[in-house]
Amino acid sequence: MPHKLRWLFLLVLLAVVGCSTGGGSGGGVSGVRSDSRDQAREAASANTQLGQSYMKQGKYEVALQKLQRALALDPNFVDAHTVIAVLYENIGDSKQAEQNYKRASQLKPKGGDEANNYGTFLCKLQRPDEAEKYFQIALADPFYQTPDIALVNAGTCFAGSGKYDAAERTLRTALERHPDNADALFQMANVQYGKGQFLQARAFMQRLDATGTIGPDALLLGRNIEAKLNNVQGATEFSRRLIRDFPKSPQAKSLRPAQGAE
Image 1 (cartoon, rainbow, N blue to C red):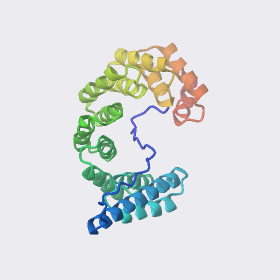
Image 2 (cartoon, rainbow, N blue to C red):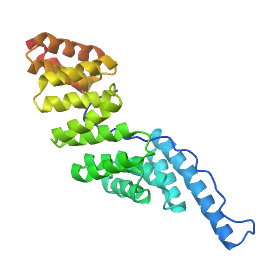
Image 3 (tube, rainbow, N blue to C red):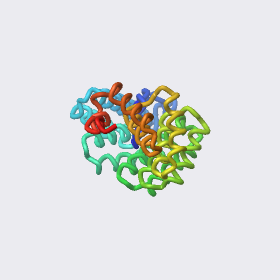
Image 4 (cartoon, rainbow, N blue to C red):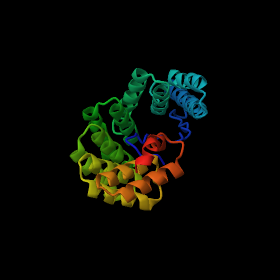
């Protein structure tokens, strides 16, 4: 698992939207219209799932066609807006990505997933104050199944903009819920490092190491923490692990020229 100031976007595989028949037994005009809407929604769902599948395969052009078809069938289908936003983000079209993340959150204004996704994207655009609003919406949703993701995203967002106190408060809440949350532990170590609290940073790094999910970013941070604490042996050990376990990583390559000096 990579550990860095990153965005833990949650994109779950979409479930098929069931077709609910809204018409009465009389088969009148209202029933026909309801059936038509249901059929459009069902077709939009199928195209959205196809679009997501193609996107996972890296077939972005055909994925875009399926997702555009989904939105043509049902312009208010939240899942289609979410998935197409991810696609646009992947191909570097930030304007279209933001429009669709925003539209998904408008269509489901209290939805935790939609708010978290939009908040995360706003952070990537270096707009943390706007993002905070959406993280709060996500956390207020009683049916949001992954509040830890929103908490870590918010903490990461604050840390990335230098708001270390706000980041620490948010990340501590995540750790109160799940003390072994590796992403929260890494971000807490990173926040303490940024604040110059190197002993506290070491403590969180030790907790992260104990989870067994430490990646190249965390190993590099561990090395830097120990260097700040003038622990040459500890810094060298983190460097050794980084080069041994992730030899092709940019983090390992960044250390190699300095190895002779250690």
